[in-house]
Amino acid sequence: MIVLLGAASGCGDLNADATAQAISNLAIYPSSVSLMVGSSESFSVIATYQDATTAEVSPDWSVNNNIGTAASVGSAGVFTAAAEGTGYVIATYGGYTVAALVTVVAAE
Image (tube, rainbow, N blue to C red; front, side, top):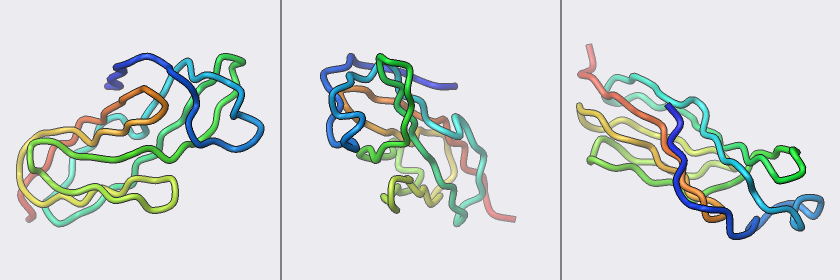
């Protein structure tokens, strides 16, 4: 599931070739995962611009429902599962917000 909220207001901090383009879409990969407590998953975000070009971007990362933490590593967001439950890894960039569904289960 890819959740898309917000509207494009500009392109933020992008490379020189993309700075003049407004974002038309933002997507997060993977869009959903299931993890055990203590494990990690890397997420990436791809922006599509009005001229149909795409680029991986470096969004602000967050997590809801106290299921873990997200940290920026380069342009990726690395989620580490800390507690059982369901929530979202959330990425915000250029006026858009996208989220990946995360289910955390007990470690075996």
